[in-house]
Image 1 (cartoon, rainbow, N blue to C red):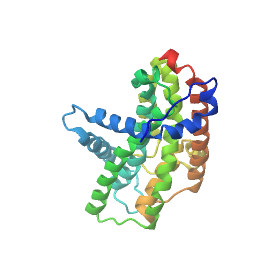
Image 2 (image 1 turned 180 degrees about the vertical axis):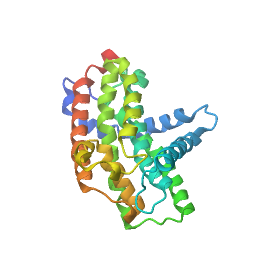
Image 3 (image 1 turned 90 degrees about the vertical axis):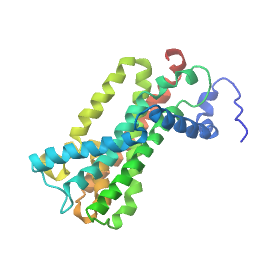
Length: 275
């Protein structure tokens, strides 16, 4: 494939930005493949980290919420299976947001020397998060076989909620990446947001335990609708889904994505100078 030729002219980055995004589409693959290699390079157990982290979290949540707090599961589904079904979208979101927020700083040598649409960098890290999602989904299939739990027809709608989760990750990720360039101490805020959000989202428990008067406020967290949707697709009729939460998730995710792209493009012109 011939290398793309970039013609430098005044205002080009504004006039041809989205066309350039398509021209440099191969860069998505290159950056994603490099990030995957770097993430597991010189690690003792390599890709098994993607297995150990969600499994240990599931065990802790199952013991704390299921055994000690005696919170209900979704229908007759095993509590561990319910927790892991909620872990899938949350792990995807947390990984994507964390990696995207640091992506521009980690690629400063490219941004300061070479022209390309900068939005490619954080977006490629969100794509990398799909690898962890695929690995975790394999663990989920093993758990379903162990518990002899067969999915229902709703499983075919799972890609729809994956797409919503992708948008929910990309919007805040773009904004965080831009802020991290200008305010370097912002990178310490993201881990706190991820940790705090884990307990505000229905990962270790069912949304059914939330009091009715608080549900509308609770649904403002877009990951509530995504997690509930994942559970509904995986657990089938054992999981009750509130379509209000899904609707709010779609609306809030769309707004967050539009805001993230807008803020990223607004600050993008100064990246090369600040980084």
